[in-house]
Amino acid sequence: MVDSHQPQTDDTAQTPRLLVSRPAGDPFSKALEQAGYEVVSTPFNHCCTAGDPHGPGLSAVSAWEEPLRTGHVMWVVFASRRGVEVLNKLLPDALADAAKAGTKFAVVGPATGAALRRLGLEPDLEMPASAAAGQQLGKALREKVDYPPSKPTKKMPPVPTLLCIGSALSRWDSAVMLHEAGWDVTCLPVYTMLPVEADELPAGTIDGWRHGEFACAVVTAPSAARVLSDVCGKGTVVCIGDTTAATAKKVGLKVSRVAKTADPTGVLEAVEQAFPLKEDAVSASSAQSS
Image (cartoon, rainbow, N blue to C red; front, top):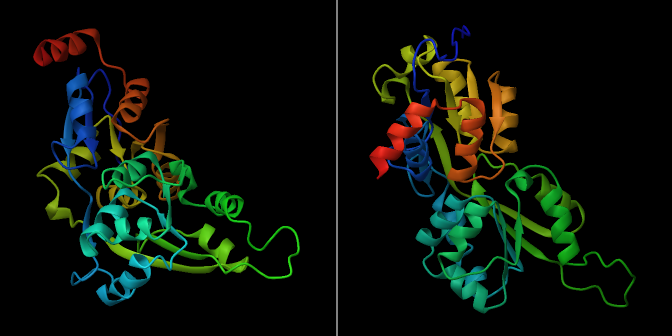
């Protein structure tokens, strides 16, 4: 696809216009709008949960209900907030039962940890969002569970059972590492993300992007970066984290900034650094907020 996107400049518009890969009214979009940016919000993907026509198989998820509730899983690892929410919806209260039975939880990213806490459960291991890919998570789990034992013992401890919950698109380098170390590892997709079609985007989005009507796109997931490049074309982006930024670069997008924290505040700070507002736009936003 031709790279015809030219970022919006101060000469073409007073207020930077942003294409945000979130639903309208989402906290990320709200934070940018309240700061004074012009925002066009649109999800770039559909979420298909297990059991949906285009989602992962439900039977594979159901097969883990009893092992979870009876504590036969040593660790459950969540790669995303959505993984927590979807599993809890598919198997209500199974995580609470697992916690009571002694199962421990590891989460990747602050949003994932917050989703688990909303269920009244505390993560036993919380890793930064950058640990979603690579072996950082696996090393942290090895430190939590000394298996295989660093010192020889007469009797080997039980093999640690690890259940990794995420999307069908999730990378599980850490799971491979632990499997090779002798752990009993299962990667269980409970949802997947399907790209939107071009006609599902707000009217004029693609033409506006290609004609430079947007200063940049704010992408909050690797899959969103792929869809933006495939459907709209190449251009400038601000990314929610290192994993999303890596994917954005891989598909030919120009990464202007990467948020230091994977939350609305972090994304707003990154956008403000890349595309600062003029004082009168900030004043107008403050007046509307008050």
